[in-house]
Length: 178
Figure (tube, rainbow, N blue to C red):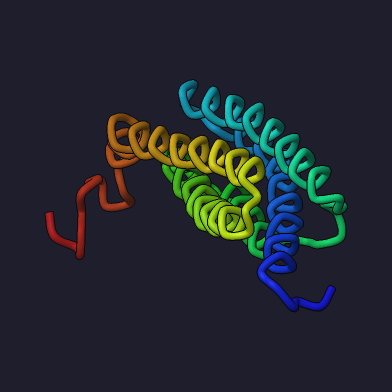
């Protein structure tokens, strides 16, 4: 597709998001399985359900615009998912892995927040109010998920990961000092 207008950019962005969300539908169950924290596991499972709803919203928007959501691969999400896979293959203490999984998930959320925010603004500019409203709904969910991940990390997971002794026997052995 030749990018000749803002409408073309929006269509390209929607296809990219559709690919990204479908990649997440496959990745989130693996992340839930790898998580040790029951709260984190539940969060990934909840977000999987949200993500399926987000795919449905994208389908709805694409139907309104009479376009197919297929035909593009989101290489950014592919890279983020690959980073998550590599993280899960590392030999880590379970609590440390949970902290890493939150970081990987937040990278995904931040990408999605940027992409959905852009798509929403373009839809608004083009007078596509219903599409803009659906994109805003997803954007709100992505922001809420990011906030939940931050709270889980701050209140529990990072503290547990920090309590894991290092090779020197001290969890706070920074720069070789005790």
